[in-house]
Image (cartoon, rainbow, N blue to C red; front, side, top):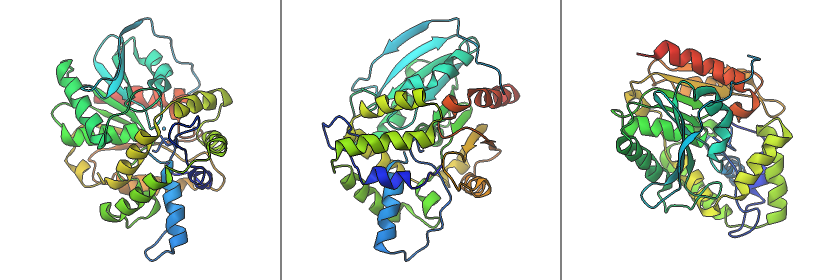
Length: 346
């Protein structure tokens, strides 16, 4: 899910706390794309800075989706004990849908419309994003544990976990840390170790250095320039201008500290070995579109290597969609999800 030079532009226009254009958008991911890199040990400081910029925005059939006939059942806001807002819609077995970095749960609207007649959809908007209050670091672990607590509190029976970009990483982390509670996984354009998409021999220790620099860059402020660069970056991740505007609004309504925390924590954590213990079926949707020169085969190789230890994982490449697959090609996503859920249903 790596992207190209637009990421560098956004990094150098880093947001300022309290400014109108105050966050870096990444959703893998969201704004980051896992593109294979050719970086090696011993690269210059200049290249290291470019890498920091790249990951700064990193932490996704032709028939139309059928409308849901069931209105939202409940909507609850983020609280100190529940680090996300939740909207529950539909009826049937539970599905939890997690958006990416600086995104609203509304990114899943068409997916909910497709699923709600067969599944109960629990759609999250994570703390700190799209107008929700942030939680202190460590942010991702707090959210992960909050989702596990939500599953227990709501008595959800092995819910399907669907995650886009940063949300996909959270889905994997949840499956690692709460294996008895999680059902099947649908991961949309996300990797278990983002840093290694750019530096193949990266480790958690080396990635931590970049994460520290990333947080520092988030304090830089050029709001007007940043807003335009954010707009430009979204054009590489989403095809339709109207959907780009939606995502821009979510990004500008997100808390800059939360965005910095989430991206840094995403960079620092490597789940490639840990997912070897996961024993639930998993579908991973990949994308390679969105910038000139993207190499489909290399992107496929990155996903294949990073998910090598996840037993039985199903990898599926979206041919036309950019990072926000649920917005760009919902029919493809729904077809792969439907087939996967039907085939793996007990």
